[in-house]
Amino acid sequence: MFHYPGCKTILCIDDDDGMLRHQRALLERRGYKVLTAASALQGLQIAAACAVAAVIVDYHMPEMNGHEVA
Image: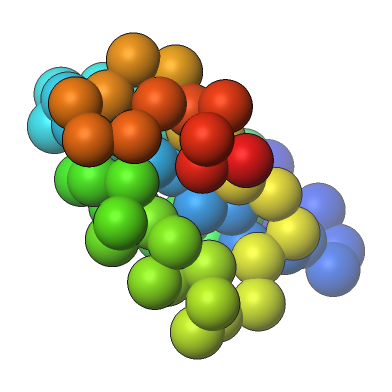
């Protein structure tokens, strides 16, 4: 496992649970702390409450697309 000093938290927003699990596993292996959200609204709530360095967002989601989230 790689661990980079000063790693940040990444928020992944996706309505596909399998994709969230994949992203979490990939990023955690690289030493990042990962938060996940299964909807755009949940992702916005997490982003407002937690300090995140980056957000990875699915573009095609039911209630709000990735561009609207950004």
